[in-house]
Image 1 (tube, rainbow, N blue to C red):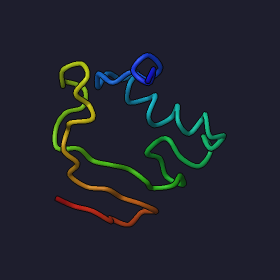
Image 2: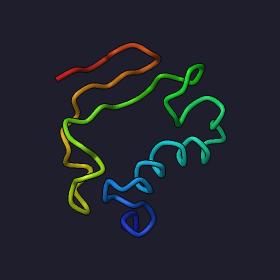
Image 3: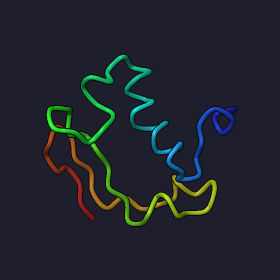
Image 4: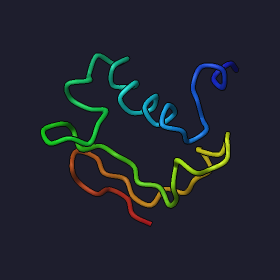
Length: 77
């Protein structure tokens, strides 16, 4: 109900950090995930578009190009 008030969804750097490093910090896992860095878990999603240039409120509508879990590609479009 109030999710839009708590999480940025505009594709800004703040929004991307909230869903990556911020989520890892909230889960007490910032030493394992939340960034693309050698030695951290390789779980990530690649989108078909520039998440930094999309209109406010449209981040969730950007198509997924690929998903990587544990360093293995598990989905590609």
